[in-house]
Length: 484
Picture (cartoon, rainbow, N blue to C red):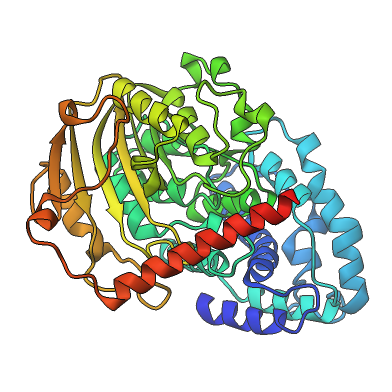
């Protein structure tokens, strides 16, 4: 039901001049899907209140509810073509009446952690790019047939929305920054094992994939009403700088069942590390911060003791500071962090090893991140005790990863299993921190099994490396052009 509707909507949007990429398709489907879902949520709450003999106050005034402007019905329950807007009338209502009304919720809301405020935030950041009222009517008619009554329907919807975000991530135009492979996220969460009552944070949350998956993980363990309330109100926190990612993140969390997401639209790195207090610190951090690009401005770098233009290095300092003593983190970063010889890299590795227990490093193969031509590792660490031993795991699914063959849960199951006991295998090994050179703190992946029996590099390995170098070169050229 949902999948076919989304395909039909994409077919309609391909004919729309204002929408040209998967990012546009996702953005435009999102705000309409959100209003349809909000209407279903309101109707469900109204029904429950009526059964309990209680009054219910709708969030939206009647004129702006889905049933009034988008899909008014006749007595037979079918679309009332006499009152349903279409063509220019529909576009005029959406642009000049509906959107200004919804944006005004930021001023009306009782506080930032309410669904009313999030409605205002979403429609302050997003624009209607659909220029034809007839196109908009076709899309509305597709969405109006969707139902979100059962948990199975809601689960299917959230899964398909994740699929749209993945497509958006593969579409370019920085979309890849918004999407981290969900099997990798789930493995990171299993290793960190967050508990109900702990605060989970992502300071570069993008489409909120880490927070949504952490919610799914904890919600499965929440048997009591009290636990579910804690998950809704006191557990998940995020920050995001980019407008589209921020809006998609909020809607993704709402569609996963978190009604008023604690996501702030802000530049996390603009916050001075010295201003972070104990009350701000969290128990768990799960993140894949942006890396590379043109670097952060000098005034941003001044907020950090280790100054660098590499965005991910600034985020790593932020994450270390944001953890409570005993707090746990899993952070994705470029694998060059392990061995770079510049001063910032060396100092940051020293800081990580001395202020935290870096207990696990997961090496991800090329192709893990579709559309990103760089290799990455995941750092797992606990704040408060220095590193004594590091366990490395070299992920090797036995095939080339990419759009056709993405990473799956089975690929990473062995890592999760072996990590519990830090077990050694042909793909995993441990090193003592005492053996790390105190001059450069080099943490490079050096698999002792491979040194004993060198593996011949296949054509696929060489091509992956060439492609990664090509992408890196393109980024460097882009940066140079921007400076000229």
